[in-house]
Image (cartoon, rainbow, N blue to C red; front, top):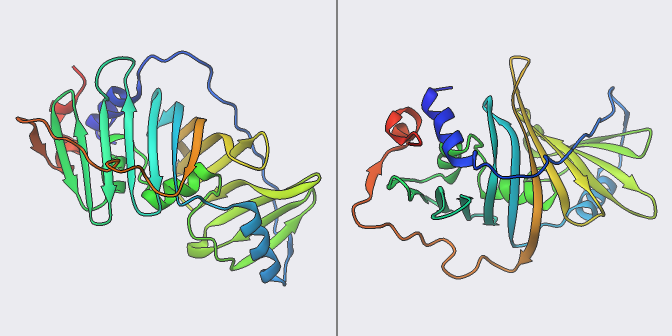
Length: 266
């Protein structure tokens, strides 16, 4: 990873916030399990386990490592299926970054530089500034406790202990687990590159999310997000995707974000 990416992550998220990291430990069963023939029944289970709101807002208290860098901080997020606003909150003063994206258009403002980058894909800008290349649909699914976006069941297998492994679109995997006296919930998911696991107090919102990425047998990202104040909305609030660019703000490219040492925290 380029040195500037590490600097950007540190500048954005090492905000010196107090508090213990949330513990999220999920051990999924090994083996192939017992195949399930009735995929329609499994699809109904998946639908019961997760219903995403049209939009949501949430504070995410982050700690752990992203791309090998230790991180801690708070992200304020508003996200729908195709749009996102994300702010990296500093202990005082202006946000460290503001990212807003809608279909075909995204902007990332670094108010303390000040600098702005623009693009067509919010996932690319989010990857450049935080190290997590998720688009709006993936972020909404992640925070809502659904694991992954796109959940058409392709195959499934059951395991002892009320576990069900479900393979969905794009070979992504969702793990469901039954709850005594209640509907099953999503407890983990993966898409081949990223692994997600949840801590839940009930069948509603997760209380904590763990995000892991392994490359060549080495864990490069292992971060936990405590979920504070989630709220389901019919749509993002008016103006949520507007970002006021101050006069004199310099334009930078995505390549600049990834390679320029000028964006280091001073």
